[in-house]
Length: 98
Image (cartoon, rainbow, N blue to C red; front, top):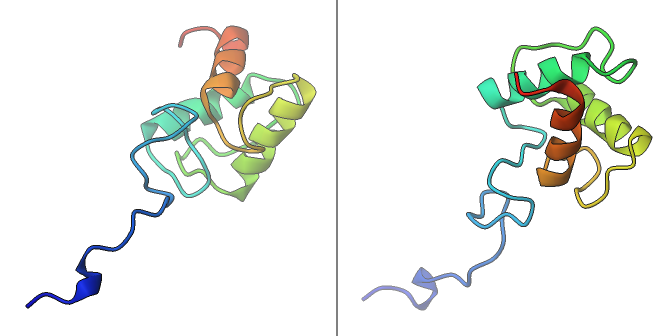
């Protein structure tokens, strides 16, 4: 018979399907075209992401740049360095739709 611990209690993890910041949230460790889009947008903001990579990897440098943008532009509602809904709206409003 199956052991009693076959059904572990549901504990929140980094890969939890429900994200309070919205499904488009990006954070350190993520990669892909959405991260590259974030990087290109940040490069349009003066002094936030100087000479930053657009390779599409959410690394510590990008985390710092996102946190800097949040601080300088008064973004509230997302964790420091995490690109959630509030940060996305603020950045997109300053960098256009493309």
